Length: 352
Image (cartoon, rainbow, N blue to C red):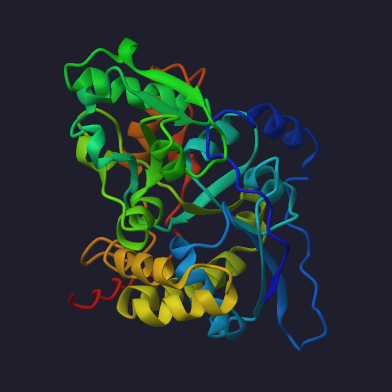
């Protein structure tokens, strides 16, 4: 495995890079470049671009890499961290064969003419939450009235919070929004810069509560599906041309990746150790806690890892259009495929 230097943490905000994506699409070849051998036998050099810095959501990928699962299918995997223009243009251009992104960036990318397709989801449900300090008294969405949200200034952030508050009979006009960018959310709340933030439960909220010992409350998005849709984040993607020209590469990559996630589900401690072996700069306590948290969440019970549902994509696409975040409806069925995933059910996580 080869790794590039770490890039600054970037926003997951929705439409900040769509203009850049559209420009990239204009110069993208749309074709996967012929992978070259590095002289190490018959292994094929393949690049995967992450959506973020390494974390426990990526545990299955690092497990597969560290244990040689990619080599077993003839792949020498290079894992790189995200480009400033986003993952989608890089994958569409063939500079990386695979990437990790999220539905809120993939659908606008496709609307902008970038031919990328989701080929599997790392998590079957969105693990996002709104997090606040426990003493802020935020127990339900309408409690966000007269509070300040700290985020990236993205239109999706505003729309989701407004929908949540309104759905709970609150007044979204009473929520204040401040753009804080890439900050430590916990520190920002403790210093009174803002009252709540959008985080991932299995990383940021877990770090605050379990590792740092700070009492926080969360409003998990998945608890409010009557108000906002579920969607896939993070997910694996490739280009339409790679699917057309090299389907066996897609199938082999996913077979090895699924093996890694099967291990992350059945043995989260080993998955944590392997992630730390690849990224020793990470906090061990957080990685171990997050790996244990995700073990029971990487796949729905009795279902194969990675499978996506057409209704989830359709509902999220409708939400974006209805909110004015996409100008017009797009074919969400063309945005994903389950064709290349292994079909065996994922293993059960260990008992607590």
